[in-house]
Structures are given as C-alpha cells and as structure tokens.
Image (tube, rainbow, N blue to C red; front, side):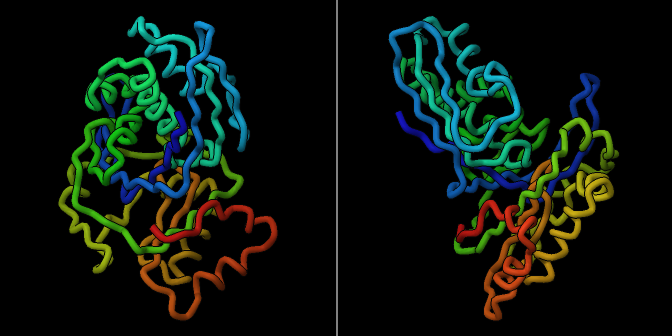
Length: 280
C-alpha cells in the first residue's frame, strides 16, 4: 500500500487556557496542504513485528520514537489481527516545522493497518486511536479545513477554500521545541476569537494572530524578518505555522513578480529555506 501523508498549515492560533494536566487549550484553523507530503509504503511481512526503513530527510529521533512505529505498537497491542509489516517512510516534510508531518505519518499508518488487516474501524474510531499519539493526528484522517479546539483534537469542518492561491513556505535552520514555544505564551482571556472571524481571504480577513509568534520571534528574529519579507512581497496573509519554525505566505496574484523577486533575492544560505512554492 502506497500512501502520501500530507502536511498542514495553521491559519491563526490562540492559546486560551492551561489545563490542570499541563496541556493547553487552543483554537486554530487547520488547512491541509496536499502537494507537500511524505511517502509511506506499508506491506505485509512474514514476521510478527514492524520493519522500518527510512529515507529522505533525516529524522532526529530513534526509530522506536517515530510516530509510525508508535502507531503500529499501539494498534498491534489493541487489535490482535495486526501482524508483521514492512514499512518504508520517505521524509519530505521537514521535521519540527509546525507542519504536522509526524502526526500525518501516524494517521496514515493507522489507516494502512486498518485496511491491510481488515480491522473494520470507522474514521472516528481511528481518530480516537491516533489522538493518543498527538493532538493533531485526527485532523489528517479528515483532511479538510477545520476549526480546532481542545488541545487540537476537537475538530469542526469549516467552509474555507484557498484553491488557486500561491503558497510559499520557508523553513530556516531554526528549531523551536514545543516546550520552548509554550513557555513563552500567556493564555488569551477571550476564547472563540477565531471562530468569530470572517474567513474571507478575498477581504484579507483570515485570523492574523499566532500567539506563539511574539516570544518565538524575540528569540529567533530571522522568522520575523521572513514574515515581513513575504508581506512586503505582496502576500495577502503571512504567518508562522503552529509553534514554528515554518513561515508561510499566501498570494492571490503577483502581476509585478514581487514574490519571485523576493525569492531570487534570498542569499545562498537562506535560499535553501524554500520548501514549497506552488498553487493550492
């Protein structure tokens, strides 16, 4: 079975409260990006365990900590029908970029196991399984624009399309840990701010706030400069995705070629940051 786990961007992100268990309540809009994806190949094997081969971008973790392996372990423990598998994971989505690549891999792995071993689980049941691996994992089983609350696992599909817009994503050599990002924020007092926004890209009324940006930009000013550069180049919307460190810009049109000129102006070191430049 050959699958293509895609990434996502966040359109706005608010931290609304801190829970007694240490997790934070958020509200955000998840938007799927299908043209930047990993490659996940899963087949039956004669063994009784998982054999994982990794390629593409290097993932900075042990194989046992990979969410694909964790998903397999969880599903095998809970469903005896799950047998041995051979898995090849080709990483194309940058690791630790705020794009949900690992979560997407886990969600697609759960789907693959459900199909290969005829587990008969519904999408909602699969979502409940992968939720234990990451709060944004369930989103990738739906892969439609969603307003997300809770810790990111409560999803409500919304009517929002960015089709035809040009998306540029820049990922510098900056790593922002989730712990570091959350340490710098203060929960916002008024919940449901994003839910009240008019989701109109035509009128540039997408929610323009990501609560992580203030503290993360202070520690990594390059990220702020990239956002400013995309806006100056004509982006109708630019933001950091999730807790970073990917900065993205959305362009409606570029009659004067300002976006292309901006990308050409990046020096050799920063030009390597361009991880996606395509039409949605």
